[in-house]
Image (cartoon, rainbow, N blue to C red; front, side, top):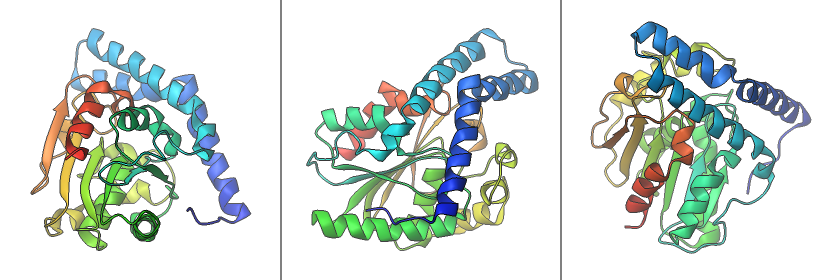
Length: 270
């Protein structure tokens, strides 16, 4: 259901993927940002070190799954209450959702469908593509609504669609994992429009903060205090949204956590 891309676009995507893979397998992420967290916050080393090592393990494992992004996710043929669309984060792809999709499928939820978007582009453009994708899913499945689970930047794209792109009502439940709704200083490290749009105090962040509260879509934000990229302490409450905060999960570990999956299943089963 994805649109075709130009050769130039695919080469850019390949380059971004290669850099992302190198950072994850080498340990530049997550060891560097977690070390900076220890130095800046003066935290004791033992607990952040355990979190960082666990984050490195799950990040490397999910990166190894990247080629599986060409295949349907687990649960692609399941028939649950509503189709579930999952949105990956910056420089990632839908294969990051393999563990979570497996658990959702075991809970008889689905079909589970991955949406790919250009993470170096504008959030508004990705939200417009998401709107088209949702309409396509609804048309092909005959469903009245979809659920959306977005990780990191993917959650911001989905929130933009719900709050400003006409998605309120098309989406029954929006659940975001480690998403920088209030922005994050870490977005300075990178390339593309997110380096500006996802900064604390950016025009995009302020526009989303001023957007009307969704009337029909239930919004849940899931965060972690141990997330070195989008720590829960830097993300305020969103009006009308449910907020769930964990203590010891890294940014990518949110995708592999059984506890997080349980919270998501509890909300999407209704």
